[in-house]
Length: 308
Image (cartoon, rainbow, N blue to C red; front, side, top):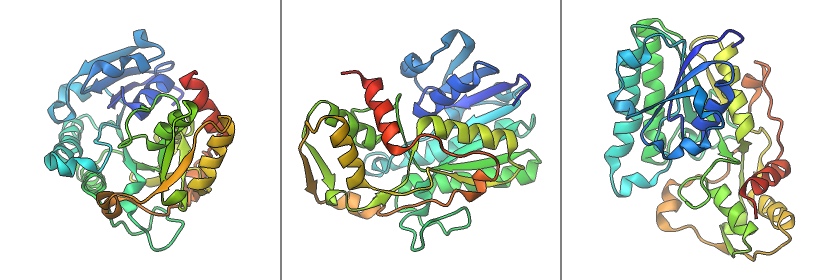
C-alpha cells in the first residue's frame, strides 16, 4: 500500500483494530467505525484518525463511498453470549457483516474480513491449514464462519475483491488484562506480574498457537497489499507451544512471584473450549509475511507495557 488510500476499519478502537489503525494512519487516511469511543486512548496519533461512533449494523453506502480499503474487525469476541444474549453474535457477526457488504457493493473497495482460528473447532488433523474442515464449537465461531461465507458470496456476486484472514490467539500490548473471557493470556500475564495465584486449565497440558499483536497487524497488511482477490489465509506463529511451557516462561520472567495451580475447566468451557491447536502458515508466508516476535520476547514486551 505505497500510495495513500482511504481506509475504513470497523472495530477500529478494539485490540486488533486499534493496532491496525495505528499502523496505517501514518500513511493513509483512516476512518474508524466503533461502537464505543472508550478505546480512543489506544490511538497513538488521534489527530490523524477520523472516528465515527456507531454500530456496523447501521453502516450505509455513504460510509463506504470513496474508500479504497475496508477492513472488517468489528465482532463479538467470545463464546459466552449464548448464555445471556445469543442474538448478539448473530446481529454483530452475521447481520453486521451483511450490512457492511451491502454498503460496499456499489463502490467496490478492497474488502478484508478478519476471522478467527476458532472456526476449526477441535480439528482431528494438525496442523490445520486453509483447506482443513471447520466444525465450530460455539455460537461465536459459527457466526464468524457464516460471515466468511457472506463475504465470499458478495465478492462473487458484486465483483469486488474480498479476502479473509483467520488469526490464531492474538496477544500483546493494548489488550485488556482484566477479562478472562477475552485476552485470557494477557490476563494471566498481568496476574503473574502482580504476584497473584494463577490457576490453569488441565495444568496447561495442551498446546496452542499464539501470535503477537505486531505480527498479526503485519499479516493483515500483507494480505491487503498482496493477496489475490478471493483468497483465504491463516496467520499464526506457526510453532505450537505447550501452555505449561508458556506459564513456566512467564513464571521465570516475573521472578516466580506467583503460584501456578491446575484446575478442571467448567462444564460450559468443556463443551465450547478448544483443546490442542497448531497452524500451517505456509500459504500466507508465500506472500512474503512471517512472524518476527517469539513467545518469550512477546511476553517481555507485554509485561513492559503494563508497567509495574
